[in-house]
Image (tube, rainbow, N blue to C red; front, side, top):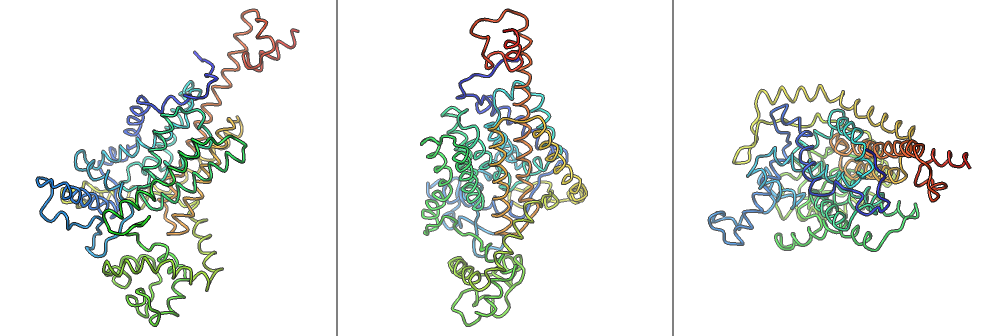
Length: 508
């Protein structure tokens, strides 16, 4: 039986609860169907790097605590962040390896895919109102679309921190549109999830700041009150990753940084696009730069060659890498001053391309990860990779078709104002994701594929909420026709619905 929603909006989000967490785990098990169907895990070379970093973190921790049964004699000498070449260490996160490694060790890599899928679904529950739950068939249909016609299940199955980029955007949408429907405890839980997700990659920290700021601005533009508690929560979520990185790098690397041991991705991007390469070709080898010392007269024109080959910085020592990181900003600023139009155009072009570039064909299936953290692949893995490559264009078409249908349906039937706000915030998040990961790094289909499902999810939740309201109005009109109207109800459209109100006026 349909029941009107509680007029008190606080606590109007029942799935942000223990029950909702259990449901998220069940849905994540369904969502990770690529793992069960393919009998494989989905990785990239960075997957092993994250696991090795996690192993180093716990070896270092065990050494500090003198857990001699766990750590080796040389644990204190283990680099906290490592790479596959054994050269200068690089890093992208402290928290993702720290969570990934023990889960893999105890339950297997597939269990971690289940965990990251469940966490993301739970974050989306912040947008699901009690009204939407009253018509669950729309939510079930929406989940089916997301699981079968978007890249979401593939992003959930992918053993890299890609999917965590969606969680700060979901938090921002909840902050901007449904914050008043949450209890203080629910707000704290969703904020903690978003803060953790923001720390899983340096780029995700930037995305969090952009998306949450957009949510606050939209609330102000819509003339919605931004309470002190909401503002402090937003600031806390945005500041968590930078502050954590500062503290962790100070304690473990003897240097404070908001992005410790980062790769010079921005420099690599500018080299490939031209401006930084043109500047260095004129400045080297005379300029007093470590880059000139390593590269000489031949400046790479490809980002991958610069980062991963001997012709670039692959063989740089830790001291040289530290110097290159320190020089990066100076070189980029000099390149921008010399070629402002070209640099601005390349950033805008890459961001625009990333906005619409989605796909899953970069995923690498593997049989398993061994105890010594090596990938095991087979002929079946190769066949599965070929299947994914052939399936990719169909999934891309299905994703855009799903988005178009969901948007057209929402525009036709209408959705609540708060969900239009949520959709606007999600759109801002998608654009920020494209600018940060595509514009500043390189356009890669998996970057946008991991978040392109978000507007579809918001619109399907909004339609479930809207369908309940339409059914409630009809039910109210039918109910009022079966009994005499009370005096207090005769002129109350909030009680009997629009149809009943019109009927009352006609009778009077």
